Amino acid sequence: MRIFHLSDLHIGKQLRYYSLKENQQAALTQIVNLAKERRPDVILLCGDIYDRSVPSGEAYAIFDGFLQELAEITPRIPVLIIAGNHDNPQRLSYASSFLEKHQIYVAAETPAKPEEYLKKVVLQDEHGEVNFYLLPFLKPGYVRHLFEEGVVTDYESAVRAVLSREQIDFGKRNVLLSHQFYTNQGQKPETCDSEQTVIHVGGLDNIDVSVIEQFDYAALGHIHGPQMVKAPHIRYCGAPLKYSVSEEFHKKAVTMVTLGAKHQEIRIESLPLVPIQEVRRERGLLKEIIGRATEENCHDFISVTLTDEKEPYRPKEQLEEVYDFILELRVDNTRTRNLLEPEEEGEILLKPMEAFRAFYQEMQSQPMSEEEEKIVAEILDHFSSTL
Ligand SMILES: [Mn+2]
Image 1 (cartoon, protein in one colour):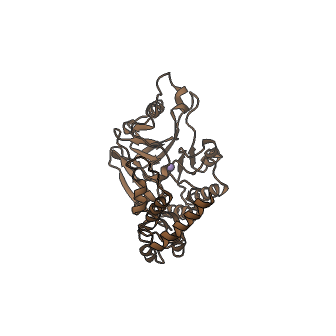
Image 2 (cartoon, protein in one colour; image 1 turned 90 degrees about the vertical axis):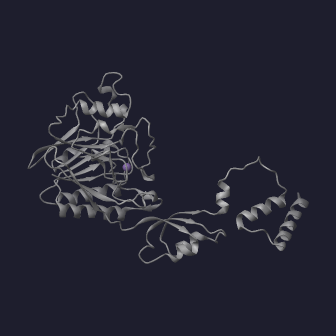
Image 3 (cartoon, protein in one colour; image 1 turned 60 degrees about the vertical axis):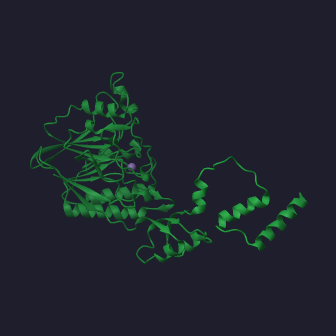
């Protein structure tokens, strides 16, 4: 069985103040084209479909268009969707029973009553059945009431308890969809800035991977860089786009999993997604950075760090002449580094002239000329006589 594993679409997300609408649409179109080409038996969307719990009309339209295009592929490819921490369960489950008639299965809410269980979708291949368990993002408080007191104390015990009441037959082939923070004996996966979750190892949100190890494949969402956790069959596929500068070197892709017979080794392939705009860093002198602009890279999203000792006049305006999308502009030189160093002694009260001299030196990286000193002295003189 061939599986497309995706997560963290974050539809509607912006990069600083820039819309990513076209970038997201381009990525989704590539995913549709890959689906047409590679013909997966199922597509998994493992949480954080939308970036906000109240998605914009535009965000809904983008996702709707994506599902529509997937639905037009014949034979129909089932799509399995779970909610992530960014999704609003009620909103994500809108029209879900209707969608199910079209083989789009949405699990947004965790079991709330004793008689409710995880959504389970059974698909067939030449080796028999594969059970897909859809575990939406959960917090311990969502499910605590389903168990005896003291059973659910943290995220790990919550997921363990929810999975154990499913009475899964691990003699069969089982796939889990989950959107949580899984660690390998406290070892933290590689994270980046766009996940926007306060991730701390040893924190209550960690779940040891042993809880889900028995699945033949665990399709995970939540972490935006593609990586396995402990073993190849437990995997974060990552976001389809770079959502922060810290993802500069990520290789975004669709993770394609080929599941064979039970106990047969799984095959993992990365089908690269090519962004229409890169997200990257530029560091150096203003002149150098401007000089590096080309027709190909001038539309990239760039984070600029200037290293000029003598700070240029209106650097942002100068950069904007050649670069279209500047995410941020920082200065890293002796002045800014000194600012970060803590004062060794207590605060010293300087005379006005001394204070201005120090300020000038810091801003200009050189002392005032004699003429400038004279001007400043005159100004100070003027003020001291008027006060
Ligand atoms: Mn996410």
